[in-house]
Image (cartoon, rainbow, N blue to C red; front, side):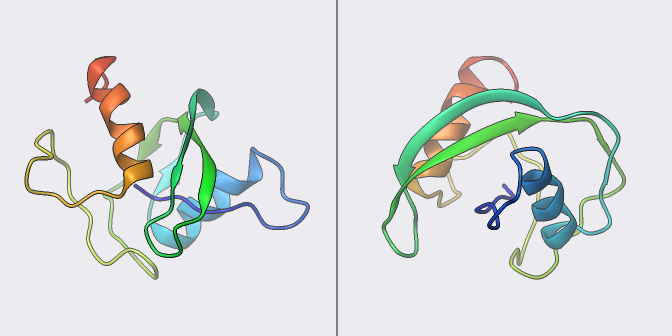
Length: 100
């Protein structure tokens, strides 16, 4: 899942647009971001405790990773995919709520 921290002075609406353009540059966002839920968990690299905010938006175009993302795929089976704690905390409710 693409994501990251807001830059200094960046709004909650600007951050996901920038992150998507950096990590999935061929992607076009065609809908407003809608708040899904907030999650607290540990980051995989530095072990920091963070609050992650998940949003929904309509997109178009093929998803092709760039820069920080080395691989992208569509799946509904997470059994063989190594996920960080914070990503798992986001994925599980998405699955439970019928989005995945």
